[in-house]
Structures are given as structure tokens and as C-alpha cells.
Image (cartoon, rainbow, N blue to C red; front, side):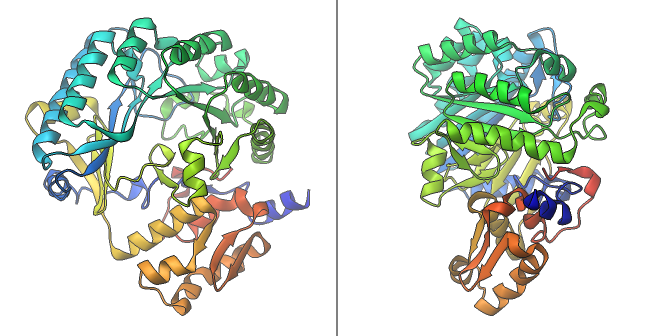
Length: 451
């Protein structure tokens, strides 16, 4: 109770802050970055280098009401097939813009629902990608798989293309909660999908589950987590549901009065967290869990954990290229985002252009602030030696930056000559602590609850 009182006093239950999958966050992107700059950044990738590639498929059979992603519904496969052909055109544009010999350290298909693609379209798209950009040694090819939208033929196509990490969305297994959030997906359907994935030798399985959903209580989340544990995923993301109907209009379908209070959200998270830890998972950052030996667990142990638009990653590539409508690319020089609307995006691609419409070029200050925030989000500490060595700080100037954080959060953090550490009791405050190191103004309404 004392810890909860301290967290309440520090504003955890009222704050709305970014998730910090990027810095600066996407609301600070501007049209100052366009196709010309995107091409320049691509041209700077060295011949024979490695990049990560993300393909966005913004189609779903039905729109889940809880989801805030940019997606559109379709009952026909025709627009999905046509969009896959546009991705192939975009792959050709990317191949022409990059130096020879570039390979992939990571390939991820996300959405939307990439498994809406028919088996032959999956095979054709995968062949186009991997012909243009072969997988590097120890590369990872992952796809978001909707258990309601997968079958033997599509999984065969993915497995034959080299899929070695599957990601499934669970959200919650309670039937009432599923009805209220517009995502009906039984445990049996999910288990069948997992069995098909395992049967094809796809070694690694990710799963997402949400806390803070309408009508969710500690008993219901415990039951859902235990069902998920029965499927033995290698890696789990335990995300807080972000209720932002002013941004995602479909969320008006979710009854706000049925949502748990912030104090209850913390309890829901803690119940799920304890169950994962008791089952042998290691805690990764603020909201992930991984089996010992998983790539994330190894990266955290070695101090190599990173954070990007997909959450935590062990990918060491310096460049992430996003293809498809609304995708965001990250370069050492900055961010570039494609046109969000599918029609606008594919029109540009069909005309032989990338659809970059906005982004952000990093300043020197952006770089050190981004690294501080990532260090907190990944390791719960800022190492003074790193910032003196790599970012031009003196011990005195670094102390000036970190001292206000220590004053504000008091016993939840520890500041000394070696840097700043978030203590275990203060870890629920991590995003708020990161916010104090954010150099940009923030519209509070644009972000999700801090817990």
C-alpha cells in the first residue's frame, strides 16, 4: 500500500505519456522530410550492409474495436492481392535505391492481418523480398498471425519461405471481454493455430496479451494468462490497453464505464506479471517477458536490448525500412513515414515514387535524449560513462540534466557518479521518468495512460 501511495503522489494514475517506441514521437514528425531525403538516407546504407525490413499490410477481415492501428476492413481478397503487388513494386524501388548486396537482419510482416493474403500471394511476396534482399546469417523472419485467419496452406507458404518466428495476438480469452472489444477468438482456435505453427518447425512464438480491458478483473486476467502459459510462448508482450477514441474512432464502441480504474490497471498488470515470473519467464523492460535463451533475454543480459516501433528487439541493424501505407523507417539520420492512407500510398508507388510524406531529421540533442530514454526503457538506468564517452558530456553537465529527475522522483530513483537508476519500486514510473528527459512539448490528450 505504501508503494501505491507513493506512485499516486507522483501522479502515475493520472499521467498520459508516450510509449517511447521512438524519439521524438510520431506527433513531432513534419513534412520537412520527404522522398528526396528518404532516398539520400537509403543511399548512405553501405554496400553489403544489413537492414531490417518491415512490411505493413493494412487489411483485416473485421475491425477489432480495441485496436488503434491504421487498418481497413475487407471481405474480399481482391484488394489484398492488389496491395501485395504494390508491395512488390515498392520492393523493386527499394532495391534500386540501395547499394548492392544489402541483406536483411530482420524481416517482419505486420498489420492489419498479413495472413489475409492467400497462400500463392504469400509465396509470391516472400520470393520478391528475399530475391531482392536475402536473409543474413542468423536473420529472423517473423509474421503477425491471426488465429482466425490462418490455415494449413498459408502456414505452409510461410514456412517454406523461411518463417522462423510467429507472432499471435491473444488480448484476452474471456468470452465476454472478447465480445465487448470486438475480437472473438477462442482458446481452442488459438491452440489450433499454435499447434500448426509448431508442427512446421517454426521454433519461436510471440504472443500479445492486454491488461486494462473492459470488464477485466484479477480473476479474469489470471485465467487468460494461465491459458496463454499452456501454449508456452517463447516471448510475451503484456501491453496496457490504450483507450484513445479521439484518435481511433472505432473505440467509441467500447463502453468507457466498463474500463478499470488506473489503480486497478496496476493490479491487473501485477497479477499477470507474477504469473509469468512464476512460470520461469524473465522480465524484459517495462512490458515484455521471455524464456531464458530467447533473443530478448540474451540481449538484455548482454546490455544490447533495443526498442523500436515493434516494441523491444535484439536487432542490431542501424536501419529499419518500413514499406507499405503508414510505415515508418528509421535511419541514423532520422525518421521517414509513408503516406498513411492506402490509396495515396499506392498511387505514389505505382507512379514510381516512394510515398514519404513526413519525418524528422535528428539533431545532436535528439540523439543523446533518444539514447537516454531508450536506456531507461530497456535497462532502467543511464550509465554516466557511456554519455561522457559517446555524447560529449562532462560529469558536471550530465549531473545537471539528471538532477531534476532525481529531485522529482526521490526514493524511486538513485543518482550517483555512475549515473541514474530506476529502483524496482519505481519501475511503473519508467515512462514518466523518460518524459522528463523529452525535449519536446507534448499534447497530453494524444497519449495513453502511464500505467
